[in-house]
Amino acid sequence: MKTTNISRYIALLLRHHPEKAGLCLDEHGWVEVEALILGVRRRYPEFNRAVLDEIVARDSKQRYAYNQNKTCIRANQGHSIPVDVELKQALPPTILYHGTGEKYVESIQKVGLIPKSRLYVHLSTDIQTAIQVGKRHGQPVVYQIDTQQMLHDGFIFYISANHIWLTKAVPVQYLKIIETNPV
Image (cartoon, rainbow, N blue to C red; front, side):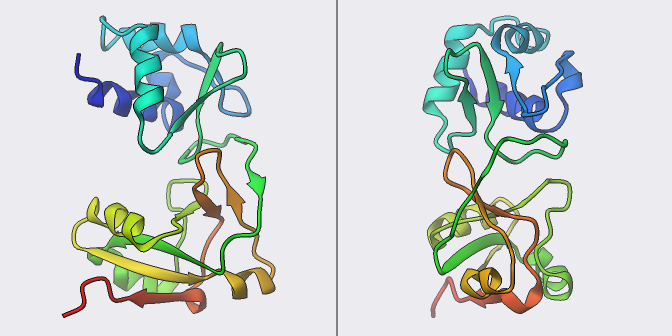
C-alpha cells in the first residue's frame, strides 16, 4: 500500500481540517488513535493501525507523535487551527534559516516572515534543509535569520518535538538573503 497520500491526508486532518473526517482535536491537538483510524478509513478503507504506525515511524520529518501509551496522536507543528502543542520555549542557535520560493521575496522584503495561515514561522538549523523547503515553492531562496539580535530585542523562540524552530514572526531587519548557488 502506498502511504504517501494517506500521510498527506493525516497531516491535513491533524493540522488544518479535522472536521473533514469527523474528528475533534483537544486543546493540545490530540485525537484518539481509533477515531483517526475510523476517520481516515472513510477515504482509505484499507487504512489500519499497522499502516498508521508505519507512517509515524517512517516519516522523515517526524510530523506526528503518539502520547505515552499510544492511544492518542497529534501533529508536532504546522497547524493552522488554534491548538497548543505545548511547545518548549528555547534559546535558538545564533543563526537560523528559512527557505521559501523566489516568488515570495518581494512580499517578504516588505513585511518579513509571517506565519500566514499557520500559527508560527518555521525555521531550519541548516541551509540544506532550508533549500529543500524552498524548492517546494519553486526556485528556492534562503534567508538567514539573526536570532541573536531577535532574542536581544525580546522575541521568543520555540522548539517542536521534532526539532523545528518556531517563532511568531521575523521582521525584515533580522533577515538577509544568502547565496545558495555560488557561480
